[in-house]
Length: 174
Image (tube, rainbow, N blue to C red; front, side, top):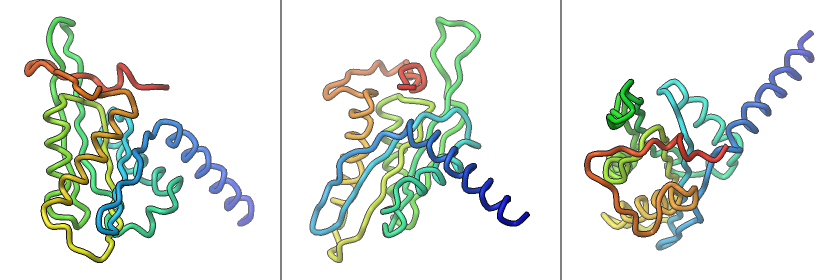
């Protein structure tokens, strides 16, 4: 009986991981003074999706287990109003620094400036032994932006109206 439960748990974990992994987009690794940064993004629809998405990311990206700050993230969730002419409205947003003070807020600011909603952006850092000072925030922003560009949600010179939010799930690659 115990063996059966273990097999079922392994199958369940694999199916969750494969379901989540097909939706994650990742940046290239940015290395500055031996510190490494990497960004990931995925579409979400509810705050409840975040723990499962983060767990799935940790399962498929084994290197994250060795990261000093594996889950610095920000998210923004919006919904469509009943009137199609009205812009999307933000219903939930938040961030987590994962021990890197100010990192989550920096990612939240990126989501605010780009006007993307229904998205979770995660950045991992592997500390290289040399303090980077405030330039670490530039690295965090750079890999997050690259990730959004690679996913096709931002262009290099995207111009966005101040009034309208862009629903990340509309252009999500499924």
